[in-house]
Amino acid sequence: MSDQKIAPSFSRLAQNTRGDKVIWAIVLILTMMSLLVVYSSTGTLAYKLSKSTESYLFKQVVFIIIGVVLIYFAHLVNYTIYSRVALILYLVSIPLLLYTLVFGSSINEANRWIKLPIINLTFQTSDMAKLALFMYLGRQLSRKQPVIKDFKKGFIPLIVPVLVTCALIAPANLSTALLTGATSLLLMFIGRVSMKHIGLVIGITAIPIIILIGIAAGYYDKAEGKSKPLPSILTKGRIETWIRRVQNFMYADKTETAYQIQQSKIAIAKGKWVGLGPGNSEARNFLPHPYSDFIYAIIIEEYGLIGGAFVLFIYLAFLFRCIRIFKRCPYAFGAFLALGLSFTLVIQAMANMAVNVNLFPVTGVTLPLVSMGGSSFLFTCIAIGIILSVARNVEQIEGKLSTVAENDENAESEDER
Image (cartoon, rainbow, N blue to C red; front, top):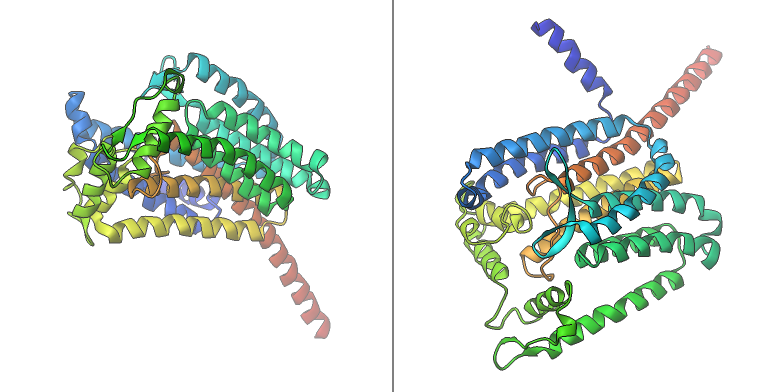
């Protein structure tokens, strides 16, 4: 194909690409950083599995290409169509979560994944469930505005889907369930749901969390600096893991600190202000999951506190641009959709970074668009594509309004002549 034929193709592609240009730039920056850090942090994994580091780099490039394609096509769809499919997608996500709990693949002692046949790719159903929930929640918030303060007509139709989704995610991934629930309540607050109703949910949810913290404190020997043996009833499922993680966070200054927290702190301490430089991480050889859960520690080690602060700024800039879309969107569903999806991505990013710097107990959440590719990466891209779809629609409306205003001004000037 000649250069003359390729040029118009790229031109048409550029013309069809709309939405917030800053968000497109943020996607580009984070994916480029992902390539650098994933390539640097997968050396030990490649050695253990007798693979080359370049194979993981190539895999990440493929995920990024697929992700950008998903963003592009998702942003071309009129966002009102997402309102029509929100209920169907939510209803599909519930049996998928149930299936995952019973028959899901067990990785790191948690049934969070479904293994897809033929392509042999593990699919984390909670990622789809979160996307479906926030699409459905945005739809319900926009429809229930006239009765939003009413408990039965306004609040119950909103909170029931949230509780069902979080309850099905929690047994395998408590941290994701809590973050999803918190994001949903924040979106409800912005959607003018009564504070009494939100406070009631927070109060009820706080009870098991306080009990968990109490058990963690009660079964820790401060004098010995280690955990006490737990009764058999507390060792079932993921309960013991939750208790140990809370203990590791509460007593991080004691002798028996979680290994990954120790290595994460070492990585951050080595990074100092400007870091060791790209590809020079030492903690990647000791830190568990340096390419996913603890990738932010590798970023700070290689690029310093300045690099870590830059990543934080990028996510805050993404949130700011999404809030701007929320304010400009003339229709409630688009506004709530953009805000809900942006909140869940940014809160997930903040949780990941907080874990890496030991401000939050260890969780299994990844750093959006930066951690090594998987189903989470692809669903993040779909969410960003939907946000850009809302932004694209806002631009089209504002463009039509500005055209009408210009025509009116021209007509007035002609009349004056």
